[in-house]
Image 1 (cartoon, one colour):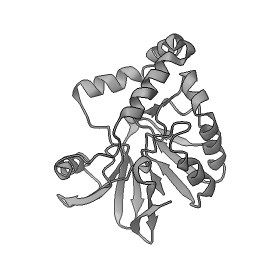
Image 2 (cartoon, rainbow, N blue to C red):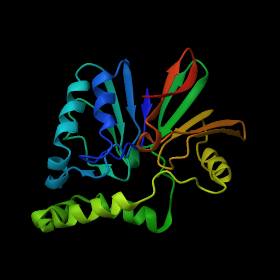
Image 3 (cartoon, one colour):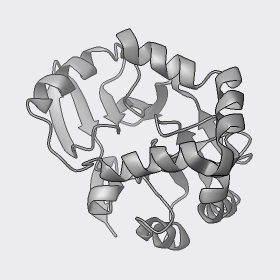
Length: 220
């Protein structure tokens, strides 16, 4: 089972709690941006998401969970000790299926320029400590969360098929690519590769299942 871009925020998108309580699968891939803001080392974000963190840790005692960090949730291994956490720098990961190789990533890897510099900087342990120290009375994390709530998560990206095909080419040795991040909920075949961009759970309460060697999108 694959779920992406929940953007959980206490009091918002509480459907995710019901999803976790009712989950029935041997394996769960959390494909990034599960939380609107969760950064290991920034204490306010742990407090804000305490209930769902506890629930995920409970779930991980029963089923195998693999968490690919996103751009809203990172430095997570200490928060989820029983979950296999994959940071950005170790994405994609590869799994084998009867139909060949499947590459998995949140979707913000292979992006250069200023974004790559930002992604590296914001994950720096020294920067994390500074952010936690200056976040007095949660002013900074609250401001970020306010900005996050204003974002239009469910908009369609023009010419995304072109973007998808370019993304597919970046994965050299796999026939199937699965990403989140873009919230587009599409599947396209190009250059002999099958590219799946996962639905955003925040937008449609949908997720992807793998059954009988086929991918099936389901809704809560």
